[in-house]
Amino acid sequence: MNRRAMAAAAMSMFLAACGSVAPGTSAQQVPLSGTPNGVAVRDADGAVFVTDDKSNGIVMTSDIGGGDFSLYARIPAAEGERTGLSQIAFAPNGHLLVERFGFGAASAVFDVAPSGQVALASDTNAARRRLGLLVLDGGTFLSSWFVKEGDAPARGGVSVITRGTAPRQVIERDIVTGLAKPVGLAAIADALYISDQAANRIYQVDLQAARAASAPVPASDVFATVDAPDLLAASPDGTLYTKCGAHAVCSISKRGRPAVIADGIGAPRGVAVDVARKRLIVVDRSSAPDKTGALRIVPLR
Image (cartoon, rainbow, N blue to C red; front, side, top):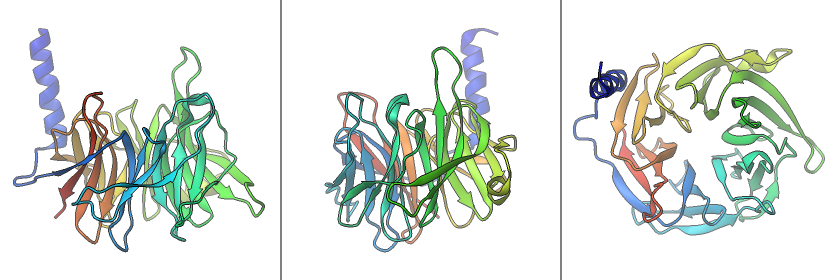
């Protein structure tokens, strides 16, 4: 089989796995000057918060349709390290938690109060490159991470982080291992979903069993096969959303079946479900240096 035929066959397999773009679906594009990555929506009023590597901060807008973003908080930069912020999530008290990727030397998790005041939320292992973040309650959250040493393959896992009673005291305990590059995290009831970008898979883990186990459990239950998934979001009906392929976003049914819901996106990254307004907010990072970033608003049925 020649290269052209092989490429055509590969594309056919991808389309068969992900379905087709839903008829009539259109994604509104909202320019965002910067280098966005993670996104979160405040349920009460639909305000949108985005991590921006260019400003090393969180930008927000109360009216995403207007595209008027302002700096909400600036995250402390690690001296001598590149800036890079990963997932962002709301805690029950209205605070935001945000991860610094760290590039293998300076990862961290920060707490951002509604006033915009920033404090270190944890004393976690700074050598772990952190991407996914999932808040379980006011004092507990999950972090996906991987480490890369020299030419050795990347290896990663998921840890549960419990805040201590003393300032900056924290306990980090690994609960899932056996991953290569875990990125997104989402939970539906007692099921934890983990997207492994290097393996092109989304794994399902029994969250309560993993937390109760005496040792980390291996990720072995493949829930869905997706090309290069990224950060995850979940809706109350059990649907997952993530990047699929280079320029598309997929929904993934409760049976693990992916279907493209938006394509033609420059570089999809973070996703957030706005339940009340029936829409999915997608970060378009735009890897081209001469193009600004954007958010895409995808209507949900």
